[in-house]
Each structure stands twice: as structure tokens, then as C-alpha cells.
Length: 609
Image (cartoon, rainbow, N blue to C red):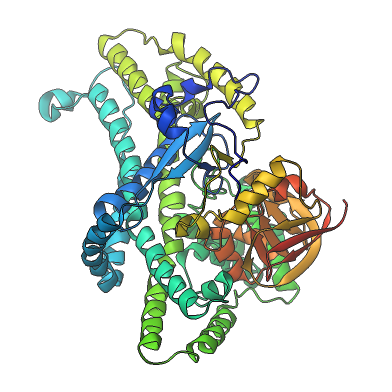
């Protein structure tokens, strides 16, 4: 790369019109500070649009702060990963940027490697039992959040409080409960990374071994050697398929197809015994499989299936239609496994002796740990965060009742530390028997921040900030986010208006070639617009979109590498996919005829809309 090209200076990015004062939405540690310009201005900051593609709400910043903290503490303090520590993170005009910390010096890497070998070795040797314990610990956190009590702030404490209970009043409980919720939201992200980073480390070891022995092997070929593994993350979609078959068996398929939401579903099916039986099965299935966010789970406004049945009802309807067309609803796991084994044997037969034993060991470990790379997503981002966001809403509803703001969701316009101030205000006012000051303060703040948020959402953030990096070699940056030297060059070409207008390059995420009309989907609430036979083009696809995969021919995303969720899901569902195109959603328009080549990583516009 040349030293002349550069991304925007993070300290010189202009505020969008109407978003003046946006910095008030975030804590000081989220922002670029003038006193650190000499250090932070020299770093390259990549936008993390894979996990955080939208403007962050003030309260929702908890997922960003704590997720990166979980990654950092796991790498740096818990397992002492030799080459990788954490990531510096900043917010610019509401969007999340990250910069990888430099690798330690060689002698420090060697010292850390000794620590890592013992610590990671314990997990690799006891993976299954430790993972079972992890599941129980996560479920315990989910149960704790669900059980957090929010006091009603009644006129008097109960007589039992005076005669028996004593201890915390409702005022004390209000503060303790809120702080407990925040503590749970903080701690869950350390659990999130506990197995995840080790899973990536094991896969990385296998990838590097393959590269060393087979210089021409593609990343996609390596990834397919560990595919064909059933993971919990696909279970919600499997349940929709099962419910579709059950509806047909019970003769209530037409009633389900006629339903658009939970109200109409109940009305259409509750009048017959067969309908009641199907509804009872649905109700039982919801817990936990419908605790599945329509988005990534990182944002409060991406509601889950359990909150809004629109997406799963549509998914069940799609599968009912497939049953009636005589199509199989199975995910062809056997086929994926056969393909996996065929590819593996081709390369395995080229090895012998110690190298073969090393290959078998690395592959076996990768297949053992790989399911976690996806499973954690269901337990944390979907199940836990659904309960977490809904518990925050309960606090929001209490404050709305006392006039602090209009809607329960307005609480998300406050930073989580600011909510402590509101709690103390309400706690004190209730205790004294007077009126809180919040109703005179927060409505104007919330209204102003909503206006700023809308202005920020209209801004187009650059893919990176700061100087162009000399090299991009950190493996996870490449595998997960899809950031490579070639990616950086494409970003710079796009900014300068050069390059092809009809062809996009990216990562060959899932094999196969497909042609079809494009459907641009920028947010989860646009998924219902996807038609049969179209090609999904999105900034990033989420795992809960899998029901839509029965309608599409292929998938294209702006961001992501060979190990991102979109790539993994596409491979398991047998759909061609190209990820990390950078500008798919801004170059391609809905209705265009496009070709997706999942073998070469090329997306070609064949015909205008």
C-alpha cells in the first residue's frame, strides 16, 4: 500500500447537521479525547459494522462496552493469549470503531505462550464438561435477570415489613435491583468470550496447519472441513419447520397461513381442538426457542420472536407452502457431512507420519470446539439479551408512570449511569412523600436526543479512520470481520470513485453460483419484503434470519469474513454467499439482476432494476 492514501482523521470528522451535541449521548471513555490525539490519531480504526451496524442508543452502549471488555479480559487476563490482547474502542457520530492493540514483543509472546498452554490446555482437555457447566452458569444469569424484582413504590410498606421483614425498603430495592441488572449485563459478556476465543484459537491452529501444508488451499475449503455440525443456533428455525409439519398433520395449515400476528393466530386457531393443540405446542416451544432476536441482539429495538410473532408466523407459513409443494424441510445435514468428509479425505490422503497425526489432532479439536462458535450466540445475544432488554423496559415503564418520560422505551435514551441518577431521584422523592424532579428534566433531554439520533442515522460513516495500515495480518480481523489489505484497497478505491461499477469482490463464503433479482434489506423489519427466488443483499445478515433463507437463492453482505455468522449459516444451509463486499447495499439496488459466485467471491450486476 502507498503511504499517501489515508482515511479520515478521527479528530477531524464533522458532526452531521442536526446532531450537534451528539457527544452527550455517550460516556467520556467512548469518545476521542483531545489529550490523546498524539496516540489515538496515529492508529487505524476500523468500523465494527459486523456487530454494530447502526447508531448506538445511549443505554445500548452497554453491549459495546461490555462485549469488548469481555474479549479483552479473556484474551489478556484469563488465558494470556500470546499474540493478541484486546481492542481499543471509540464512538464517532454514534458509530463504533475499533483498533487492535499491537502484538507484544517476542519475549513477551513467549512468556505468555507458556501461560496460555496450561490455561487453554485445561479447557481443551475438559471441553465437554466445562461447556456443560458454562451452559448452566448462563442459564443461572438468565434466571437471575428474569427474577429481578422492581418495587411498585406503594403508598406504605407492608405491615409485615414492620413486624417481620425489616431490611431494605422499596426505595433501597429499586436501586439495588437496577444495579444488579447492570452487573448481570456486564458479567454476561465475560461468559460470552470464555469459550469463544478458545474456539477461534483452535480453528486458527487448524487453518495455519492447512496453509503450511497446502499453500494453494482456500479459506472456504478449510472452513468446509469443520462444517456439517449441528448447532443450537439452528434449533429455532428447526422448530418452525416442525410446527409447519405439525400444522399440516393437524389440518390447521390454512388457519396458520391466514394469520399475520399473534392476535389473528389466536383467533384463527382457538376455535377447534386441533387448533388448540397446535397453539399449546407453540406456547411450549417459545421457551426458550423464541427468545431469538430479529436482529443481532445487540440493540434493544430489535425485538425477539417471543415479543413479536410476525417473523416466526411468516416463517412457519413459508414452510407450510414447502410441505405442500412436496419439498423436504430437512437441512441436509447428512449431505453437508458427506461433502465435509470427502474434502477432508482428499487433503488427508496427501499427508503421512507426524504431519498426518498433527492434522488429525487439529481437525478433531476444531470440530469439538466449533459448535460453540455459534451456540454462544443463542444463549447470550438472543436468550439473555431478550430478558435483559425487557427487564430494562420494566424500569422504563415505572419511570414513565411517574412522569419522567412518555414511553417505557425512552429509558434507552439515557446512559446507564444516568439511570442511576434517575433512580436516586425517584428513590428520594418516594421516601419523602414529595414529587421527583425527573419529570421537569428528562422529557426535554429525551426529545433532544431522539432528534440527534435521527440525524446521526442519516450519516454515512467511513469504513475506517486514521492512517492506512501497513499490513493487516491479525487472523481474527481477517476471518471474522473480513478486513484484509485487499479490503482496505477496495474501501479507498470506493472513496476515490474508482473501480468497477458492475462487479464487487468479497470473500467466497459458501460455494455455488446463483442468479436472481436483488432485494436490499437494511434492517430486520424489512425482511417481510423478501420474495421467493430473490438474492438477499444486506449490510450484515443475522442468524435469526434463517427462516428467510428458504425463500432466497443466495446471500451477499457488506461486512464479514469467512468465519462470520452469515458465512457459517450459508454454508450449513447450502446457499451460495459472498460476504465482505464493502458496498453491496450502496452499489446494488432492489430489482437488479445479479450473479453471486460463492466459489470466487464475486458479485456481478447483470441487469439494472
